[in-house]
Length: 152
Image (tube, rainbow, N blue to C red; front, side, top):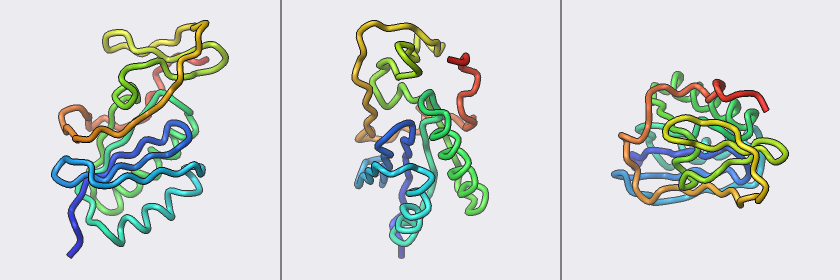
């Protein structure tokens, strides 16, 4: 019998990170420098051999729009085909609300609950990390990528 787990996917930039959670506690982490479009099929094939997935969670932006689209389409397809619920939250949840690179000196920032672009002269290091504990209340059933962010 396979262990029942939840998956959290952060595919906003390189590296791609996947957290495997049992009873809302992080039990394993998968990190890949490969493009999500190349590595997702391989990774998920291995994950499905080892685990039964209860729910999928992912960061739906901001970040690389192409990476977010790939993650959304891949995870939404799995969600529909395997009847696994999909949930999302914004990327700031995984980087302690720090600015996220947009283009040039423009960065995405979250002020209150609104995401905007802002020019920054000093370039902060952008990193994303998986939480040690998964809190379902921090995620939404609205899973579409954050396209409402202004063009950069």
